[in-house]
Amino acid sequence: MSNFTDYQRHIGTRPDKFFKGTLFQGQMMLVGINCFEPGQTQAVHDHADQDKVYIVMEGVGRFTVGDDAQDVSAGGVVWAAAGVPHGVTNTGSTRLAVLVCIAPPPEH
Image 1 (cartoon, rainbow, N blue to C red):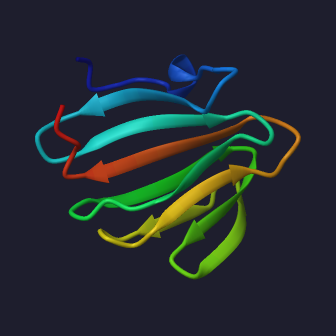
Image 2: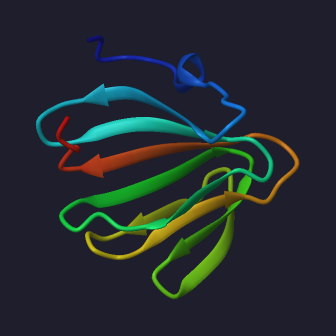
């Protein structure tokens, strides 16, 4: 695994649900890219023992964290602490690309 990459090399699409790709994964953290076409959603869910950070790279989406929901565009950062319900919907007319950091990484 290289220590350097460009997130755009990991962009993808799926017609049935949002696309997920892994950029880096170590023992302490996973860094991935989630791509949402207009209208695609990541249902509200939680990770009991994992913190998550979303960094919006492209597009705009509605992010829910706990009881709060906000539209976030490129450059925005969203934090969801372990155990707090969170989700995303692409509310824009173009792809929403989100860098996602999860710590510790999910076990496979």
